[in-house]
Image 1 (tube, helix red, strand yellow):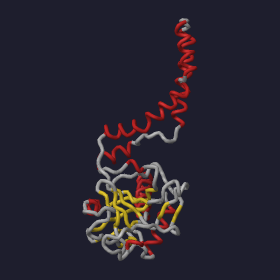
Image 2 (cartoon, one colour; image 1 turned 30 degrees about the horizontal axis):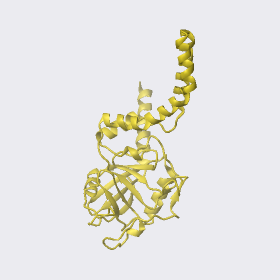
Image 3 (cartoon, one colour; image 1 turned 60 degrees about the horizontal axis):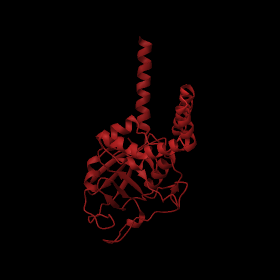
Image 4 (cartoon, one colour; image 1 turned 135 degrees about the vertical axis):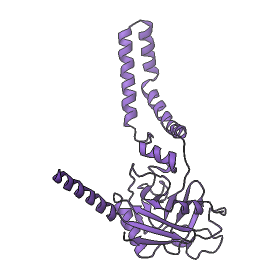
Length: 270
């Protein structure tokens, strides 16, 4: 009993130390502060973000792109001291890192993410860590999430069904049915079904929300359309209300708030 208690204590202390070792940053603004934990399994983004933070790179930049129920984006050096109404937000090609897109890090509210250039000019999906965005999003019902899955998956399944249940296969099935060859009909139909399911299960672009995604999107909310397309490298653990305040600001035609939201990013030691 004593030994078991010691082991439990060691495990508990170890878990506390592991949690304490995760890097945290504070993003301060004139509308409030947000604290983020940076993920250890996205080390390229974590380390690059920490390095730029230590250099003061993001300080005095703005949240220059704000869209209610979507995101708040900032950090671009072109936003420093930008005149009112000026279009800003250009990235820095020297501040890119390889993508670290992981399925268990998704775009729930408060997700800290790296933008990037479109696939046609950036086929490797490298992130632009010279700026960042924080997800605001909205809350989804279970039915809405089901509909999103159907909208993506139904065309995929239809394409596969048409591939195997083609005109030739349909003609064979029709002939077997007319000849009352029941066993042969069932065998061919079963073979076609198996081919369809095997092919469908091999598809990488099928959308199936995990239990964690469904729980998050149905409670705190988020923006699932971005999942799998951009790297999520941290999440807000304090200050979600600040995200709400910034996202609610009135903006111009370029989504820049009329009221400047200045940024200061600090690495925390706790």
